[in-house]
Image: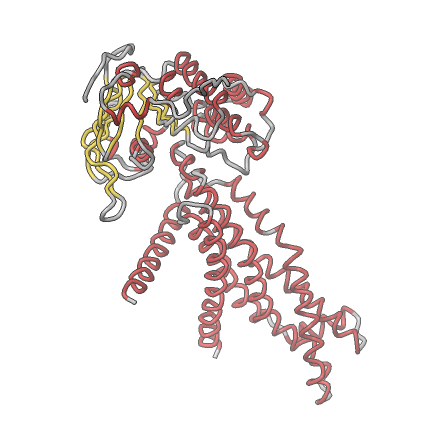
Length: 265
Length: 253
């Protein structure tokens, strides 16, 4: 346990520093029991764990969507648990969040989904600049021709890409991904993972990726941490954890669908 | 029993906080004018045919049903005035509000409830956009403004329905009919009846938004939000009506 590797990050300055994070829902339902996570600038951190282990709650605490019970969350050198709404919004503008089901605004077209945050926070932009930013955002995710479609007309993978384009439109320094490949077929999942990597390289963002998909974890993660019983159970690179002696850790890496044996009669 | 009381008090408390937040956010800048106008169109214009038809039928039915009683006393000329007073004072405001509780309150409850369940409200919050200001304030204000306008429109259509009903057995041209109406309906009949519709509108918007905004997770809660919004909004319309009639009675006598 506790196997750590030196991550191949640009610098080793922690941009996210979570210490002793506690959160419970109701009296007997403690989800997080002292989580400690550090993410360095430019690093891609993958958070693994069973369903209900508190992975999503952790990243929701990081943007103030869920109030913490106890602990510190320091992002960009600011303690965010102590901020009021206005100050928190200043931090939120520098963080992107890709929701599990993309959370596209149903009543708006793809263009309006992207315009909505952009126009509110970049009021000095001219119409041409807004148009250019949206076209560029959609081209980055390979869906420039979906600009006038409604979210209901899009497939799961397309919604995820548009969600990603919307997340990135404000050029965040940190991007939080809540299960980016859940519910997608293996090919689309891989495409989304590769897209995350390409965008990370292009924009030089820091990422926290929550996933069950080990292929996604392998492709995107510089470092992996595993949550168990409300605390970080272990951490390390994909290779180190994949070769772990710990049975529980190993069970994450065993393929759920082994190749079929050929039988001859 | 204790648990029921506790949840009732909890609910009441959170409705009060929700209402308090509405007033706080409504006066703060920036005001979402575009969304407000869009909501006015959605609540007002799209309810116009439904409210108009209901008003027309109420006027027509009330006239037809009141005629035999008045005819027995040879007082048929009182029919337009009597029907118009009932319509303007009570029937149209309450029926319009109930129709809108069914259409608007449930619509808002379902829309905001599904936005909550599919994390669209969270998405707004993480993009540093105040969802309360954008979604709740605009919808409550649109309902508060549109219900009185719909009621005034429906008042006219209802009186016209009365005219059609009156002409089934009697003959009166439109100007004669309206002059009979206007001798009975005073301006003072309109004022309290219209003022109370602002409160009806506020209740319709507030309850729809509260139920939607506080919906739990899961798609079942969207149905619950829509359904409980209609029930609570309809009930509160009757409570407001009861209070309004007491107050009007106290002030005018």
